[in-house]
Length: 236
Ligand code: ADP
Ligand code: UDP
Image (cartoon, rainbow, N blue to C red; front, side):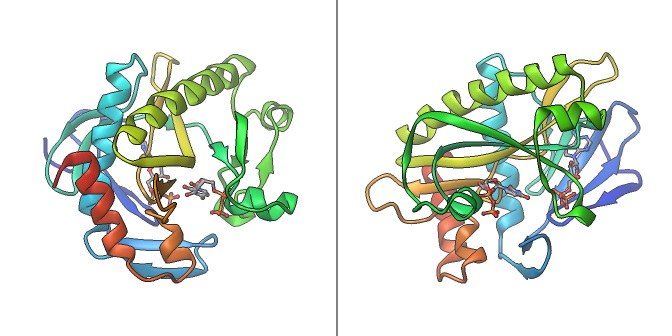
């Protein structure tokens, strides 16, 4: 399958149409942004790593009966996916306090929760992806009540599958962001990506950060961290 025209260029990926109106190609870039685009840079080799890792994790989810957009890895950076109408909600699941949770509620990073939390942000760059609750999402008609329920159920199941798998590879899943989309038949599937750009990964022994926080916080060894996650999960 060949890319036709570029439909969209985002901060980390480009999206292309294909000859099949139900499929598109996502192409992963090395570009990195943080703080709603205020901090810009690039992480050498990130696109290749995120493409391969995200595909591996989506296949794992498919094996666990969670529907995803993944169809076929086409090349190092390019993947064929089912084209969806993205539900404009960033779905964030947390197992341990970190990032904006720690800041907002004035708590330390690293507190393990008794049970995972979920929150939504309204996916709108111009508004800075504001935190939103499900009643607001309904009022704004971003999704139906049934769709929100489905998304929450999938998100918690995804957390369980990923948490267990990653721990087997020496990685603690601290928190992560998911995006869901709608197929023409109205069903909800997991879309976008699952990678060190969209998850917080800590080394199980040292709690060293193995994700985009190294870039966000100007820590050294950003590329090394991405390579290490790739090595542990894919074995290269
Ligand atoms: P952003 O838009 O936040 O800058 P990216 O650079 O990752 O993010 O761009 C990828 C875009 O493609 C995102 O807006 C995402 O919602 C969208 N997307 C992801 N998967 C699909 C899909 N299967 N079908 C259509 N759009 C998708
Ligand atoms: N996240 C993301 N995209 C965003 C915001 C957050 O992928 O636009 C991910 C982030 O990598 C982390 C989780 O969602 O794994 C929770 O992020 P948090 O709300 O703590 O935000 P941040 O620290 O980015 O302000």
